Image (tube, rainbow, N blue to C red):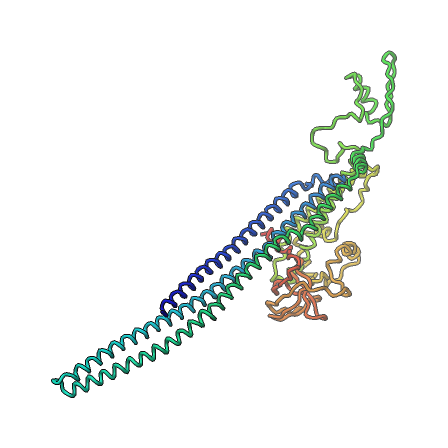
Length: 575
């Protein structure tokens, strides 16, 4: 009876465990399936945003189309492209939020559920195995009790048979009696053991089915309910991610509407007049030419025809009148360098734009030259940091470039003065000439290098130890005023730190503007290397100065700008 009851309960529990195991596994598979769905949706959003950005970039104005920005309808279209670019960015935000708020969260949660589920079912199987082991032990005790009882019966029958036999000795009878008593004692002990273990098994079985298994099932149920709840939260987040960007997308669309409404047709029409007006005055009236009388045709002084002698020769040779200026055909060949093919007003604008571009190139070359000069002075002061002569080829190349650009600028200024009705004065100095450029052109590079090495000593703050003449100082003052932001003012407020650094080697810092450091010392970085080989550091609120960049290991903050060194650029070019 016990066996039948035990077997039925065990089979039912086992079926429940199998079904629960399948159901919970199906739930986890569903979570992973939904995670994959959200991931594919995120990829679709990223691809859509990428295509929108590429479309916006494709129709952005090229450099040769920059003149279109003066028309409101062109600006409106380009503003629409920018708004469309922001619109694409919001779809990237959707993908990022889905990745961080849903995909990453559900992936991590699925792993946690798998671990928790494995633990619960492991506990359940362990409890089942323990009950099964107890049942097997009970069966063993029962079989032992049954076997001992049979052995006791046989021993008793043998004793009675020996006792009834008159031919058996008394010793054999006594021995059979003792054997029967021993077997009866063993059967009694087996009975007590079987009864005790049966009571223990029934207690364990009740605890298993009424305490342990219900607790495990309750934990599995709580796990399953939590999984369903997380699925609901993820579905809600899926909708909220789209809802959050709707206001920003609305602003993008409002921006497109506003720029469309800002188009001014009359203003654009005026811009066309301003762009294409020639500056010519209308020609005078054409006089009647009576070929029946010997008379000369007079030409209006304001017309653009050739001189009268040319007109006479042309009329005598071709017998045709000169075409008036509004109907002159444009030359289809290459345009002249001085833009003389353009009307006066358009020519003036082109020449002025060309001069501005040349001046920008001159300033760029000067900035490179100043950076290389400062780097060379650092090399002269600290030969272990680099060879000063390695910079000379690049300095000579820059000097030649500046000279060519200045000659080019003077040429275009002369044409501009001609258009504006004035001629440039030949004694005028070049537009942007520095003292260093003059000294480099007047002295050979080798001599200049020797003078720098012997007569002048530089420090990181850009000052020189030698005394300059008053004439040179007066020439340097204008350029110093332009580049004064590169040097530190002792009265300026304390600069913020942009990172930290660790000294790799000791540095004594004897020069003005430097600071002594010891090996392994930690300092704050307040100004990174600008290409001169020096980094500005701070020890505390009172002590700060420059140290060689090669002597320290710099760790910039995440928001600090990326290091750009003129030294590496030009050394790589020279090599």
